Length: 226
Image: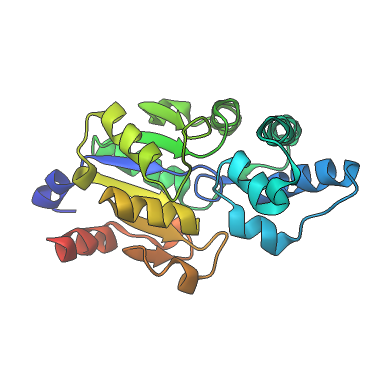
């Protein structure tokens, strides 16, 4: 990447689940086991459609007014406890992640995790994957008033890194996350871990895997943005 393009961006904001971590099956298993206790179920399509949103919104989407806000919160916390118990053997780095973490670090870009997940999950997964030293900040949107596609978690992450929104690159896999990046005025690369490319079309670039992303592609993306 050319020096002038390096100056155009200074930070990368990583979503966690489906971007850094191959964790979708573990999250789905945690929900499925918990809901089975309640005599109900959720389909994989329902799960995929809400993946990347905060638990309160997910549970509200699935149950509507059948649960109070306190009940939704309690259910979400129980699900996350189940998820953290499933990390070993079920959650791993996605292809290309390590190479890009190292490349961004070599370019002296600041890096943050900006996830809708609980902070306990963010910390646990980052520690489990052994990638904590790459990040300058870890942010959770779980306690924000609005989840993705609201851009607040990305704006907070940019502020934590001392970068303006237009200096940030977001890497996402979720439809709400891509929309949140767009609303934040940030460049966005989407990976098709969870959704097909056509559902992520509002991203600036869509790749099947970070293994497929090259510095030349990123440079061209920056040039196209001007």
